Amino acid sequence: MIVEVMPIGSKTVIDYSDEHPSNGMVVTIKRFSEIHYGRTGNFGYEPGFYPNHSWVYVEDEQGKEKLISSCHLKPCDEEEYEKLVDDWREDRKNNDWRKKDRLRELPETDFVEGDILSFKDKSRGYEGEVFVQSIDYGLLGKFCNDDVTPYPVYLVTPVGSSGQYMYTRPDDVDFVRRGKIWHYYNGDKVEFENIDEEARFFGALGHTEEVRNPYSEENNFSWTLEEALKGIRERVVDAMSVSDGLFGSSPSTHCIKYRDEDLGEQVSKYVLANFSEQVLTE
Image (cartoon, rainbow, N blue to C red; front, side):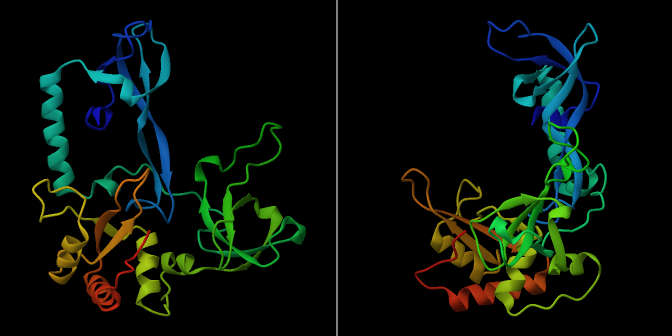
């Protein structure tokens, strides 16, 4: 969190192990690296480029600049830092900070997420149609080690399948048709076969918010199955997801609310009507 609350130009201290030569060095935050969020899998961010507060460019007292992980930085003045944290939290409550932090929009691309393509060379193993799962916008315009071959930035997967992925370039594929995501972002009306498909579509676009559990003393994002069902019935949340526990731990339940209240109401009714011992699984 430290660099999220400290503005560019702030002084901070490098916090490595005692043996590291840079440990304790006072540096100045100069700029942040960048991270992009596409039209899907974006954690609710508007598509575009944002500051990556996990990696920071700092300048030492000799004017030398270097990239460092923010986990190795600590504030010079703890009291001033705590005030900045309070202001930062208050701002997050009152503003749509995910839009405010955006640096610029995504660049134009040949295809967008969800578009349907087919490989020109069928021997590559994908004889049927594939769709664009995601795009590595950060590598657009960059080249492989030969400085000639463009990076393959389109991650595609066969239509109607899962578990198979391949990165490709525009020259390797034929365009078949636009997907629902392109139509949505271009203002077209998007038709869905059922509420399940619509819910998953807008969930993929990041049009949901994870909700804290008001029924627990911790008020964190973890729910029991009973609490989740109660939350759906009382319209505190619209849906839940249950993921398998890792390394033998018990499954975890998380709940979401849709930005569109009408859609959220339909989803909650659908979940309750179709709920059984087999719950929705991520």
